[in-house]
Image (cartoon, rainbow, N blue to C red):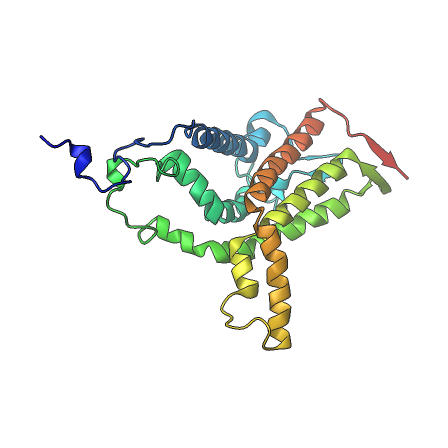
Length: 263
């Protein structure tokens, strides 16, 4: 009797969830990504919805505003149970959820689609439909969420400028650095976006035909250099926005003090 594997074309990988010829510990990367994403989601929900109404921990301290709440919209007009973060967090959340890099990351970590390169998927994925049906068809809105993402990003830079003054006196504090680094990393993440790269240099047949095309080509080259490190920008900015929120919260409860020089 001919073995079943002998009937397959040479080089064909075994089918079935987790089936692979890889000898490395491929499961470590999707597992780590899943743990980090889960932890970030849990922390974000707690910070944006529970810290103030449940524990009385404010989102502002010593002139610093948590990035989860910037820009601060109608804080005095909302009921105590309604967090102002809800009005703004949906923009960066939608931008990151539809991000091309993050799609690959959480598709592998949570949906096992596939778990890793050259690793078998669950049998439920045999009928490939791509991102053509709800809810995955919403991924096509990514470029529009990119445009919206620059709105809260501008306010984050404004927060950095505002934090340079406290009680009517100029200052340079650790909180200014924390908010500034976070804004810079989020800027790098936004400017390295694949959709922005297409926006500045896509749909052109010739980069050198006109002065306008040469300008777009120059911008495309700069965005491309940023885009090459898009995963690093994505992870660095993910951690920085959480750490900035943690810093403000620790100041608010008095567990730490802000090292600052005033003038």
